[in-house]
Image (tube, rainbow, N blue to C red; front, side, top):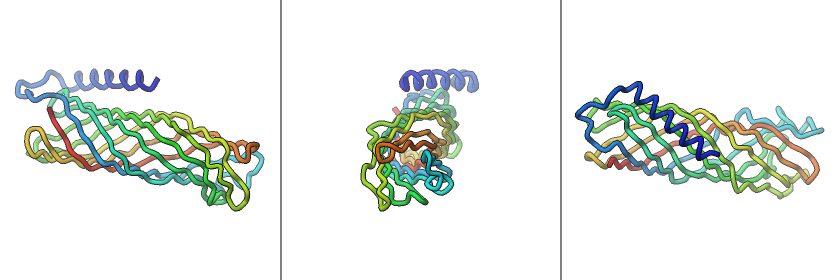
Length: 230
């Protein structure tokens, strides 16, 4: 499902970019394909996450919430330039995260999950600054959660999460960054993205108590790496 969504989104981005940009100029003879490899810091912002412990309002929001730890992972992206200024970028990577409770559920090991968040962005590149080439982007994200594992370990109140399901989710994405080109092929890249990622989840505590809510992950993605233009 996610593969077809990504391909459809890439085709749509290409059509929109081509219509907006018009025909390529004669001097745009460089290959339209570009790769970037980055070290990526993933910093979730879980403020606003909700917890609904069925039948136990004292343990539910606003008395309780969620916390998700940071992660550092490799990231690969593939860009296609329709013109010198307009491109589409597909960002690929996976990231693991641990989830814990806050407030009245502080110290509760909710569980862990891996995220596969392919993101498609339409970009505008500023090319009038020589080797320094900044860009901005807007796009969409579809995050798949896999290898989900409940915490199992009881907290001080004897509560243990025995089942956990985080649901796949769509979200918006925004981006700002720059390439500093060393030559016509190689460059240095810095990039910051913000994803609006707010999946719903379901869990079970002590095999009997249903829990549900929304995990406001909303991560900042801060990357440093290299660029290669074919």
